[in-house]
Amino acid sequence: GRLAAKPLGKTRITASSRGCVDDIAAAAALRVECRLDRCEPAPRCLERLRRALRSTRKPRRRPPQPRADMAMPQSPQSPQSDEHVTKWVARPARSQEEGWVGTAKTILRVMLVMGATASSLFLACLIKVFVCPVDCVVGRRWMDRFVVAAWADGVVGGPILPRGPKLKLSGELPRPDGRAGILIANHQLDTDWFYLWDMLRVVGAHGALKIVLLDDMRTVPILGWAMRLVGFIFVSRHRRRARPQDDVAEIARGVAEIAEGQSPSLLLLFPEGTTVSEEAKRKSEAYAARAKRPAHELLLVPHVGGFVAACRGFASRGVALDELLVYDSTMAYAGYRGEVPAWDLGFERADDVELPNAAKLFKGQHGDHVRLHTVAYRAAEIFADDGFATPLDALKAPEAESIAQRWLDARWVEKDARMTAYAADGDFADDGDVVLVQQPAMMLPFACLTAGWLSAVAAAACAVAVAMLLALPVFLLAGLAAGVACLVMLPCLCVGTCVLAPAAAAGYLARHMYLHDLGVATPLAKKAPRSDSGFDDDDESVDPEPPVVGAAA
Image (cartoon, rainbow, N blue to C red; front, side, top):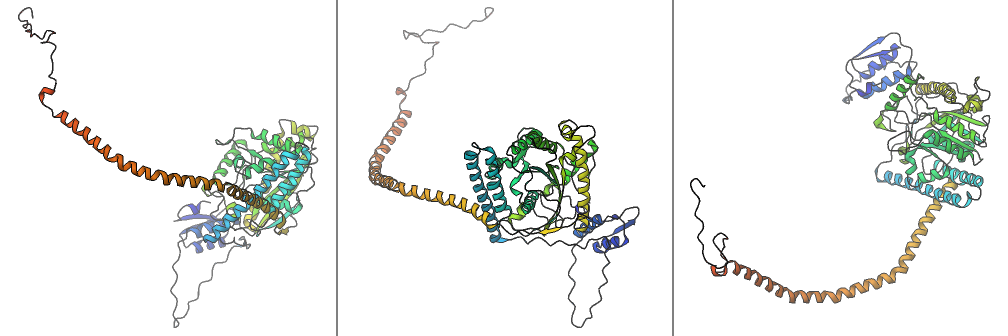
């Protein structure tokens, strides 16, 4: 897996098929020692080896063009690819819009998103101040319908960001009328929540979504403020610069507050805690070894505390575990080949360059489609244990995390198998009927949100203009007074300078000459030094005492 990170000289490759090995050796034109032994077929690994060798191959020189009188030699037949190699190729992402036009479009998209978020924030403040104190249930419903759903339709489903990617859906989609639900998914990129939200728009459950986010988003201007008002939950994950808090208790408190609204609610939770990278993978494998949990090839080990806290939060507000649905969603992007990126790449990829991210969306780039497979479970089935009378007793017991851990480990083993199949074949294996959905852009919510912040900007501009017009006479009078003062004072300053400057110069010269004359005066004007040993008050000289000599000395 690290062949692309180091130069290839004499490299030993272990493969399972003579055709794959011949293809690799012929494509790389390197000294490759091939060895066939006890390995099982692994088409994804072989594909990664091909990419690694192609990336380290030196560019070939362009052959000279043949003349008309020369016969074209027959090119040798290219080696046949192995039967395991996938023949599915994703559509490449759109080319990046370069130049000042692309920069202007990116800035415009950012401004439109922030403006729509500002409109949603203003509406959320109105509901929080005037509606929630009167009726909290109605306030929560209005917040979900007119703020969360409107923002999702105007931004996620609007014309601001590219609508190119399609959704390939299978399994069981969340119910829009469900009393409570938890949506868990694997975490690959910073756009995972974007496409999961788009999936909920298909069934009309996008207004009920609440997301568990990192504490960094809490302090983001406008966007973070709006998220806090609508009920999103922020966790610190025990980082140094984050707020000191108990993440499990924070999730339980936030979920209980959401459930108080008695309206359909769906909590989006990423049990892995972070996106996949080499550093996160190393820490996850070390944790799996210590905790004796199954390690995964393409995914991270899921955490259990947040999931159990969410279930307890719903149960604390009277939600029955039979009504609490847990949706397990596995998502993969077009062009995914199983790459685990380095930590310094962030959300970029070295090989799987077709994968989108938030920066690419603002630049107008997107992939071909996003694959989503969702399976629904009841919380009562998850916490059903023979050692407890009811699932609720098992949820309240200290052993609840152990029960949930076994269930999450089983689900993540299935997810890892699906992701491995997707990396090899371009799709999940045996997951039932697949529906391809590409929703059109929602123009009315986008127009309403845009009109809201544009009206606010126009009103502010009008207020500033009116204030300037009202203050214009004051500014004119102040400017006129300053001009008159300058016209009056400037001649006076000039005359005073012309009169006083010679007098000041003459005084300075006189003082300088006096000091010079005092320094070179006659000795009579100077005071002679006086000695206390040969001088008395009667001005009579007194001989000093003779020095003592001899034994007395």
